[in-house]
Image 1 (cartoon, one colour):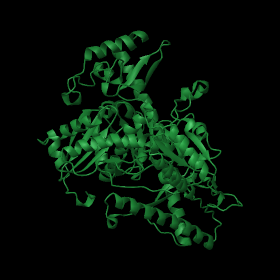
Image 2 (cartoon, one colour):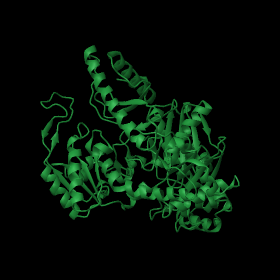
Image 3 (spheres, helix red, strand yellow):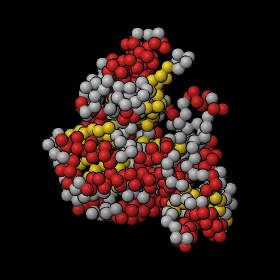
Image 4 (cartoon, one colour):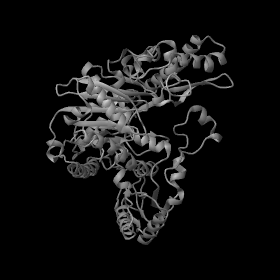
Length: 618
């Protein structure tokens, strides 16, 4: 069914976190109810239906009643994260430019990603990130297309230096099929400049696969992430090949469970940089961090409603504490995001996190040092419910901050005596403290970790905390906001009646969006003549028009009427000599003249000044 043919009605938005699956059910008049269930990672469709049913019950309806009246259901889950962390993805084969066979092992030297400071300082004990592809399934192929450079070079960007060796492609694919790979990825060095070699290799691979009667999809990096930095690009390609299709299968099960109850459209999910797409979106790896995105989208809406344009978000859930920024109404975007110890060529909402949540395990080691997290009980909560170790929730129950008879609205009963006994045995006695003093001490350490993250997030970017409002949400946010807000120096503190489901609320506010990126090397020194600026404008304009054509074609395949599509434009730019590029949204999408280039430069400098003080401009 085409999107524009679906009758308007209810909107469902769900955030399936590690502990809870939260639902926001929006009725046609704009009001909404909240539903919750414990997340069932082994059977997400069951916790989906239970959470929807809980929200529906407040309207005197069932989940079937709601689904038959729903125009859009948005589901932000944790499936891809679980696949990556547990190492249960597909058996991947990879074709690369000859000479780059070890790219997945070397990883650009980023072995420290996701490590704590203590682990980084003990590098001899550190291990490489678990690979997403067996090194025996990475095969080099002779080819080379010239890439761009800041320096004068003999070869022009896009020029074929070494033709594709088609025979090597055939033999490589045969070898991979013998190794029983389930997906084949292709990543040639400069395919983001000209994808002809990748596309030709894909054509050859599909022909060989068909000849062998196999069913193995082939994915090109130019189709997944046509951007520079091959280390990041190959990780994006591997995420798509290794985890995306398995995640899509899980999301299809949720979609089918909704459709059995009368839902007539495709299930949607959130992109890692904001916006919603259907679960049939071709680059599904872009949804890898769909959960926390809703919170920042919701914070952006709160900024519009309240007029408080500068907000620092504090999302405290069961497994982590995430801090993000909305500055002058804009959400920060990272161009090269780190995720599960991998760096991707994927724009992602800028979030800083620590592995401390309400489900974080608390322990005292043999040296009487206390540790909080990163291990988490998830939906099993703690000793007070179904987990064998002491957690922050146990301490909240023991100290009376959480009502053991009203957890999950009274659906789950917690055991305060077990929590108290666990706190005394595992923390108070080893430290020689009174049980309640021990509990307060744990919470002091817990809150200090979070306060430090809030301060670092603001001050490392040169912001004055007093100009920001701290927005507290997440399943455990209101319970702990008294502790982590004190001493941060923020101007205001805010929470909401539906704070526990705020990320789901943000998902309900998301736009249906696709984002397209393409790498160019365009230098704009102050000494450029009007004629040189004109040529730069033509290069940028040509790239935008190419991305528009791709967008119209893909969205038309998803049932979107091209006349209903609107475009917003932006650039990644940096001062020459800097390492990091900055996302610059633009109010215009055509650059034809030297004056347009000046407008583009001015827009970048305005964004830069919002991120850093004006004195930091080059």
